[in-house]
Image 1 (cartoon, rainbow, N blue to C red):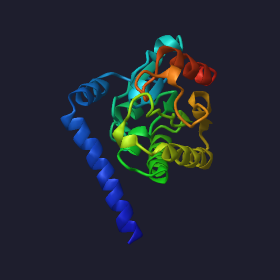
Image 2 (cartoon, rainbow, N blue to C red; image 1 turned 90 degrees about the horizontal axis):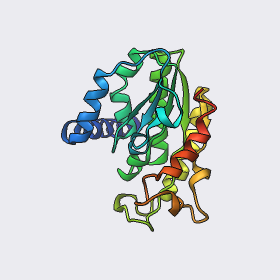
Image 3 (tube, rainbow, N blue to C red; image 1 turned 60 degrees about the horizontal axis):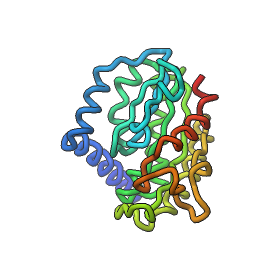
Length: 217
């Protein structure tokens, strides 16, 4: 029964990612562009959702080999589904951040971590020389703007980050805990770092950059 339940969850996540890629115009444009853009062995890939998508990473890190592979609305299964063009290039490093869209789809922290572990195993299997950096989920702030699908789910981010840290340790990849850098005293994304409660303002990206730049050299 447990195996059947896990299969149902996996199929549901895959279905969500597939549907998103085929019905959301922006997702489709972004994903098909990434299919055409080559990745090389010197490249550093920033893999993620809208938070990653929203930055000019090569400028932030002053490195022309940094490639943004973030897509608005993506879930962890979506990352898995679009890994082929990335892994074909055997990149030097991959920085992963994701999970908040899974949280909005009512996915548990443990399920997010299991999906992330599948992604990491895939990368290690297909591109064993690639260094992997797993970043924590960031908080959100429903006081700035209410995201109905995230209502009352702040704890899932906290629980998910604990599970993700265990995945990083189990898989021997570098864990980067960004959450403490962005959270306020009430467990919310600091209001000065966002204008919609979820996405980041410029100075927040500078904080993120400073947290990872030593790994991105």
